[in-house]
Image (cartoon, rainbow, N blue to C red; front, side):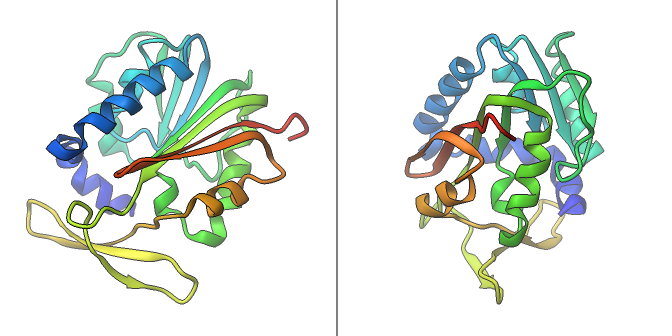
Length: 213
């Protein structure tokens, strides 16, 4: 997966150019700006910083992390300000920050995590956040005719897509499409006020981390 996103770095943001998705993307951009206003945000899987740029408009500070240096190099060229720090980190093993963050964003990562590993990810993610922090996870809904077709499903229910890059290389990529009930169940017992919003092309899961985490 890391090799795929490193190879895809320079064409990654084109996924946001699809005409049919523009109205929903505008909804998400506005939602992100308002949700993280005046917050200190830990962002995981920031990629090229596409969503970081909208968080940066209203957040007090952002620690934007990703496993892939190629995408982080592109993110840094956005020059979002001194309140934004890009850092190469593993979302499954985040270091404890000197001061826990008050909010968290995980954009388009959930679908690439094997189903049995979701709790491991959430445990690491929440470790960087204060109890009661606001969290937003968002990702894709499978949309026939717009999404890349699913090429196979493995024995534990993970689904995969075969993707071709501009250089002609083909890559099999895990891409899961969780249901609303699966999302809510994943944060049951470790969150409060969890809500899921499903659109045609995207979903959001919003909640606050448990006061006892």
